[in-house]
Image 1 (tube, rainbow, N blue to C red):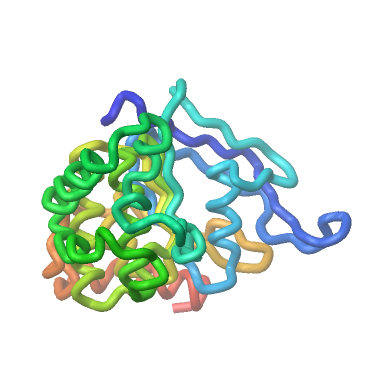
Image 2 (cartoon, helix red, strand yellow):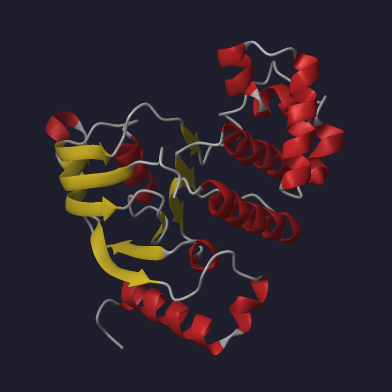
Length: 259
């Protein structure tokens, strides 16, 4: 575990929207995430997962309850937004976007930043981004922009990483690359990671623990500690054990207690 990685403790948190907060999104959620743990939050689209992630990251304030970071001093955090295109700086080149945090905080010369970014891409087998480094976000595809947003998070080496549907725009090839890169990054640096996805395979291939969410207002309806160590091979998907856990979680989310 990275000694800089904080844990997260959420106590009775609720979030509502609207005038006088009359539209509840989720209510009375309690959650403990250990320092350096990788947790996946799985549920259907529109259930409130993203709002929960915003509250846990402190980008949004809970309507009720508290969110605390445990064993935390000053730490670096990163958030990969579902609106990945909107999170990039269109007036900066791809390599400048990836290295933005270091460039902004340390004012490192751009020539050094290019080499740092190339080293990162080689380390995580993301060399497909190399030809794009001097392009601007508006010159590349949506999937490529999502790769840039994820590479920026990896470059920062955060102690706390929040991922909101991070693979949604990727084709099969790049999804496999990023799934492997994310596991490698976690195995090397041991940040505390929260990944939100409506794709069950994404969380089963990366997380140590899965929280299933559902109902309206949203709540945590199930929890599974996964039996496989990280990193995980893509071939895990075709095993009986994977299929059994996958079906169990999906049944809980979409069928409730009905079998």
